[in-house]
Length: 74
View 1 (cartoon, helix red, strand yellow):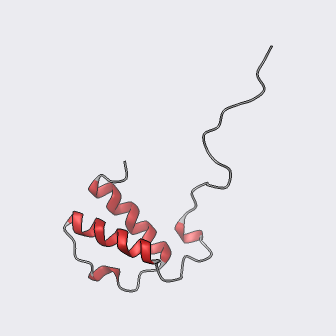
View 2 (cartoon, one colour):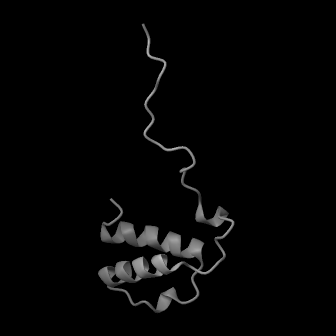
View 3 (cartoon, one colour):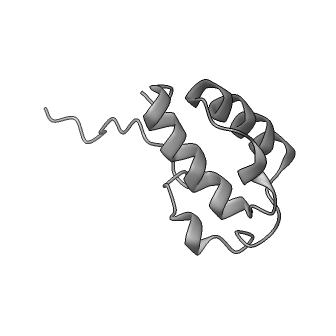
């Protein structure tokens, strides 16, 4: 007897997209993005002046970079 059911831990529709491909990527970053970026920048020893004018997509990319730099992305 074979088991035709497979276990897949990924949820449908949750595939990671490149922020550059987001339809809303050019919109201003969200409040939660800004708050998290402020935390990450503080932990990394950077100022928050670079946050002015960031789009959602740019904020997402910066979060990824800072998570790697601070070890939070693990």
